[in-house]
Length: 313
Image (cartoon, rainbow, N blue to C red; front, side, top):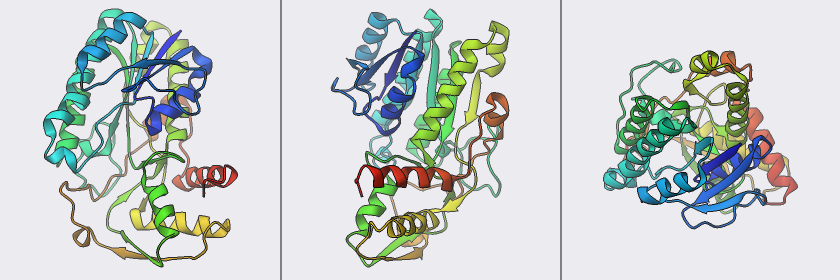
């Protein structure tokens, strides 16, 4: 079984390389072809979704059975003025990968976002809720979804949100850094979502792949499609920040315990509008694959414990 992980140098890609290693031979593809931390046994490859030929050449050379596309243009604010590049990576490249997979019978794992919705809901979005992205990033991700779904390829599309890891650049690590520097943190309290660790997403991915591989052809068709893979429960960015600071303080990792002050979205203007409500209904995935998606606080505890054990905080 040949498994290609695109975007292997990112938060999720790194975790996928480790999580999928026992399912087959994993090739970790990054823009630079550099080794991926935590995946020492993975084969290395170079692929840049902004340069379609590099991806298609790699696919032709490797002929993977499974393509896990964790690569994406995720600079939400920059996408407002750089939409062409976001579209090339998040949409057109996905379409090219899906078309190749359809011709060769490969399975595509692709990751999308809560930004495909308008953020105006008052209860968790199901998979079939109407999409209406408010910005360039969301539009590019939605087009990638459309191209994948219409390609004829075997696919599992996982929407997720508020993703973080014990490495890379993310909200959790930013809060820990600021908590060590400041006496007060000002964090938006009127945006609601479910913080989701890359470990949970990668574990869910592995379970889904295993179920698909074990299924008969007719059963595979039933399993394929779009799912929401997020932690359960919900909080605000302020609530998430408070939990991070409290956990670090309880572990004795902070010289000071800063006050976390709630502010509004209007107090922190950004070029791209953020969804006010990003909670995704994850029951479909849990039912289809028998895999629990626990409360977001469990993932936070696990990541904080890992950071403490490795002395990264």
